[in-house]
Length: 72
Image 1 (cartoon, one colour):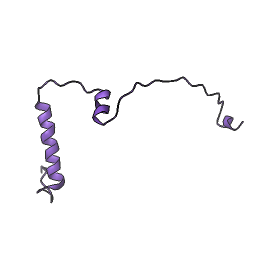
Image 2: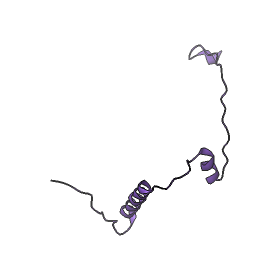
Image 3: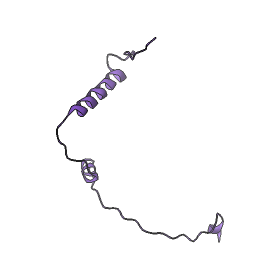
Image 4: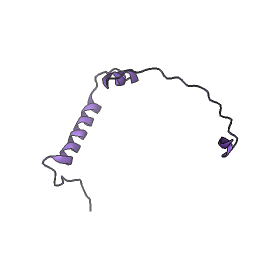
């Protein structure tokens, strides 16, 4: 016996309709052949009202020899 997904009690709206909108939007985006600019971290930050800054790393040395070394 084959089963298929059928609308649940919220077929008139609710979760089933929201799921359908997500599928429709995903399908539309997959079929869209328009060239888009690549999304950058700076663009995402600006869209969120922030600004992107460069990150840096600092080398750290921790002279801990074992689990109890922090007590000395």
